[in-house]
Length: 218
Image (cartoon, rainbow, N blue to C red; front, side, top):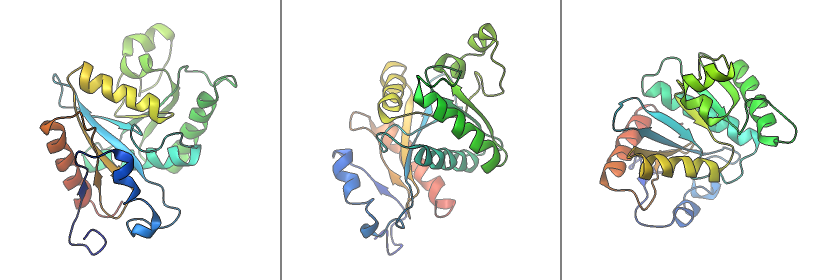
């Protein structure tokens, strides 16, 4: 139905993510072209705020290379703009704000940030950034880290699925946040949440999918 255009989104039910995606993401399924990269984005809102945080990738790409993370960032920026954020602020997560060879993802984060400043228009990107700098302007001030993204990020790009998934579950289960999820990069939005999430997250995912679908093919 999605291939033929009679369905404009696909939503995961009470099934394992790997089982669900194995039927959708191979090029033979007809939902993406060979070589196209897909990325997952969580749209997370805290009980005390209507401002979302877009977290990518916490559900799909296990150990994404730099090319895949670049595409995940591009897709998250596109979604932010569809949500009305005119100039998104994106943070490339690592454990340290200085790129050092002993921490390979910090070097990759610096590469992705430099690339994004040239390749994506109307976006502020900083990386590598430790999580305290992403969430706290006070931490940034204490460390002397100057960036418009510090304490004010719209997007967080995780280095791998374990890190991203831990942040998502901490926010959803430990902080009471609502997290809708969507896989972007396919012919239609693929709505994907954790099986432990309740109706609010599924409704949020459906709303997110409607916004993505209205914006055309991702």
